[in-house]
Image (tube, rainbow, N blue to C red; front, side, top):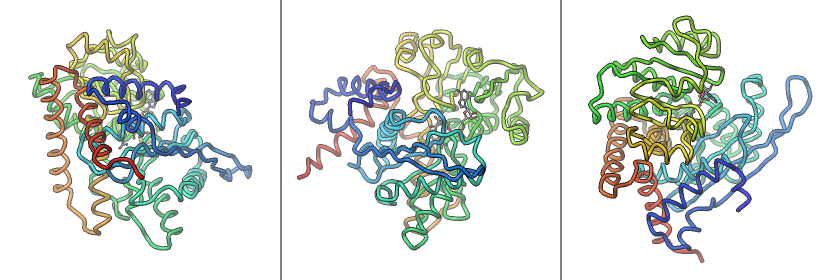
Length: 418
Ligand code: NAD
């Protein structure tokens, strides 16, 4: 599997693992068993396009480990998806689920495509065929998917329908992040962004920063938009927002709801009248108290890490900070990092609640869901801060060490079959 190391994102995930394994003084056999993914699936996905031609897309799914339960993780539709990226994301999901105490291994899937250039019918065809290609490898007790970049509740509804048609009965527990009308969980759509905001708010409280602290958010999709709404609700000032098309900046504050309405009509944040235009790169280095990268990987790197002017880096995206940037931030010591596997865990925690409800056919109300979610996030946050303080390591090292150790413990006690 060494070939995977050609992917810069997978390389980054492996290096994070190796450094944490050194810190935990893991022996070489446990290290190997814990690091490499259990299963990698690559499929070709033929889709009949609106033009009449048939186009073949590349689809992937990686199941990182099965020691604690089924694998769990999102499905991404993006032009940049490749096997290495999916493998890295699956690995991070493993540590994230273990850190939060969920009975899952990490999984991730992807199809290399640009969803904004596909019609609804083409997207449906792509999703259904990808699901069929994955049928031998997925199931409510084997591997459960959820939305990620470029996919949404509708994608999950098509997946659930396709799976159900093949097994001969409705099985809503095959995916999470579905519409509530077909077994989805109340509040799941908002959960990742709200979880990010919940933890960012806790960090503001710990650092005793002002009640009207400034917030900058990169990405205005599912995670970024709901983080913006919740931060605004807490009373913070959203001074910058961006998406793949560019950024906006207004030191007096941007109305998140008005921006959302504009985005619904125009499909992008750029051109919003109540703010100045700014590039994505420039936006990240503007002065603010809270910076929330909620788009994609490795956007904070060696060149901009020393220029960040935030006090809190709340990682809504997976892997937004590369290794060089991480080292720079650690040496600076003035940025309170809430690492991705903790910061965006609200999504998978609520997905877990959805899966549990579907398996039992017994549904909870939204208050119960958010009460359980915030209690889980608070407990995990405190555990990471305590470990970091006691062992004198960064928050990221603490979160990774706690997550990896739980996977190692499970592998150790289960032993090697046969
Ligand atoms: P999404 O597709 O809903 O939104 C992505 C947003 O990022 C869009 O606004 C897009 O325009 C923007 N974007 C893409 N590339 C960009 C770039 N280079 N610069 C600036 N903006 C860019 O995706 P999402 O579900 O919100 O996921 C965002 C991140 O959060 C991903 O890293 C994902 O893995 C992670 N995440 C998502 C969830 C979830 O529940 N959706 C859970 C945990 C982690």
